[in-house]
Image (cartoon, rainbow, N blue to C red):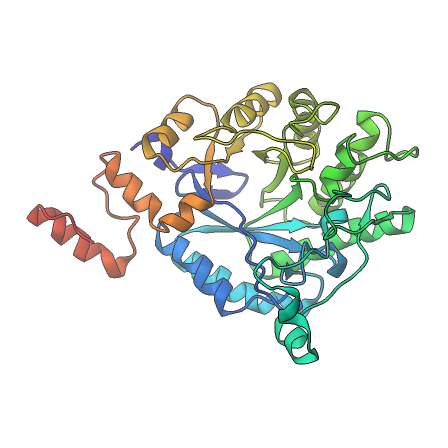
Length: 375
């Protein structure tokens, strides 16, 4: 068995392999509800053999959505449509997680494929589920003053901060009722919890601003509150931007210190990405963010998930074999080939067809016997 297809356990959850579908926003919900698009989009990854499928950034409160098209878990009625998808993915052997998120000052932004003229009439706005609201943030500063799609947010007061924490808790409880195996707390990509962490966005003077310890406070409070209601046998993941990729911003050293704290607070793995603020830029290339996952894994002694252009099968297997990360997460690669795991397993020389769905396994084995390529 190749390293990429070795099972791994986090608490009581055992993943059949190290392949993960990274959260991918679809901007296709109305009032936060999952629909047939979400089912079709996600179901194929279970059929394709992924070990873990992570649902997209899901608003823990209505104002925490990136756009009016985001998924949500702020009310009980949103549980059932998600549970339908979870149940199907479980039937295909995949573990399932959901990314719980609050966009902060990057909230209430447009859906890119809808132009203003598409939302002129009340009928158009109703059909699209259009909403617009005032974002909140650690400080009353726009994500990008040069971009008119970003509003100036309201700085959160203590009551607002408590609403955020309560939102994560309530959403986690609903995620458990929907049958999710894990939740991922989104603290990356310039969204609210990342805004509190980063000196680029957090200019508070209270106990949530200033020192690194203070800027980490909200994420640790959210983590503690979620861990308190999330079943003890189920793991918690946290996605962080390991570096802001900007002068004066959050650094790899900061992330190692944060990951140590998160581990002590009951987090089981770190999803290691980077960037998210207008000031930060990094040149993307194959496996360009793997050093971030490796630094956190080795510096904090915690399992990590590598992301960022990891579709090359041999390189992905080598990342796991070298101990640079424990999971390979694909987004664009998964969209390009929803069957990436079953194809990767064959490319790596594994003749075991048990990862294939039972409905297609017999055809695949028949082709192998005949020496055919298969479909």
